[in-house]
Amino acid sequence: MSLTRPQMRSALRGALAISADFAGHTVLTSWGRNKDAASLPSIGIFTPRFQIQTAAVGARQETTDLLVLIGRQDGDTLEDLLDADATAMETLVLETLAPDFDEIEILSGENDVPGIGEKRLGTMMLTFRAVALTDRII
Image (cartoon, rainbow, N blue to C red; front, side):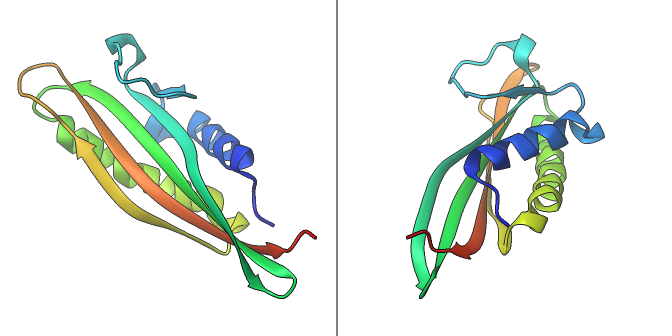
């Protein structure tokens, strides 16, 4: 059985709520450009794209892209913190969603760590893809 997109986001938010790796992170349901220091560190979970294709007679393949954004503020160690977050998040996403999908994988990770100095704001963006083969609804 695969999860719907709202169920995917909900399952991950639930896993984050009990994750020691992400204790103290604010989980956001929307991601604006300007983050204030009070909301950091923060995590946003989104499903911006999905595709449905006929896989065989009576079956279809549902592919959903899952985007996880992690925002932090720090000085010289910001990139290292975001890399550690990415590793922990990859494990959390795969362990949480793998039982409900035929395939799930991380496609890419990208960080944005502009500037230098004591207080920099940075973002790690992780893209995952979940695939489920389901009965075709007629």
